[in-house]
Image 1 (cartoon, rainbow, N blue to C red):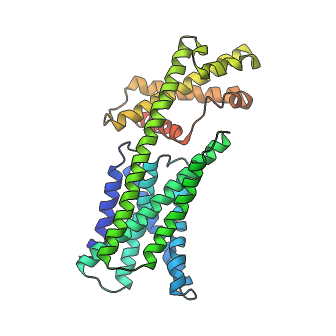
Image 2 (spheres, one colour):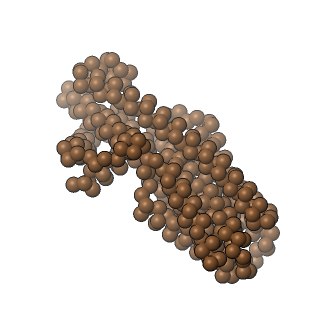
Image 3 (tube, helix red, strand yellow):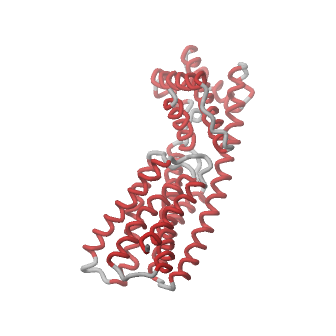
Length: 347
């Protein structure tokens, strides 16, 4: 019964965090894989600590072990961030929490098997507290990694990077191991420690969730307005009506007429696919996750194939010229990949 009391909170907490994902960014299968990855990270740390425990004092380990644990848990999260699998705050939090949850499951098992026996109440609160600290710290690291990848994308695209974004990323990298060290260094009554940890992580999660919602809607609303205006100007033959259109007209003389025509087709396909992906994203947010019509499914896939074909034929110089227009940020790429995957699954 004590095992159940110690492990059940992990499952409950993962479920709560997953339910916050109103955009369905992370599948249940991916969530379970991440939990298993977190359990593998716990095994790695257990082996490392078994070796270092022979020559590292307990006082030093209180500071070193949390840092090592966060570094090991960060490895799969770095892979997700670099592959653009975590591009928003909320999916970063969900993936980080899943890895931390898997880690805490095995840590609780190790503690109960190798440590002293616990009463039912103590096991329950300790299980929830350990789950909170591991899931919360891993979620923070996951968000920091997502931030770092986003900043790197902006630097590669030649765009400005806000100092506040850089400060935020650095702050998150520091605060995660710092919270873990504080947790390991100050031992209190399990119930009191649970209340402190729960309060801190709940406030942080709420703040991240609100920030994420605001960021997503800014990305959708502003990006969609500009792209719809550009699409209308292309279809009506009035490129000069938009700022982006005027930029495209300014490079017209640099290319032969047939190449410039392909460039405009390339931009139009990009905009049409981007608008469709964002619209689908908004429908899922509103709970309108209806199947895509067969005609639309075929249209999106054919548009994407034509887009990739034009991308190859245009050449690097032409693509670099219009890079300020045809740019896939992580959020754009993920929404388009989700749309295409959905179309392919329904074929």
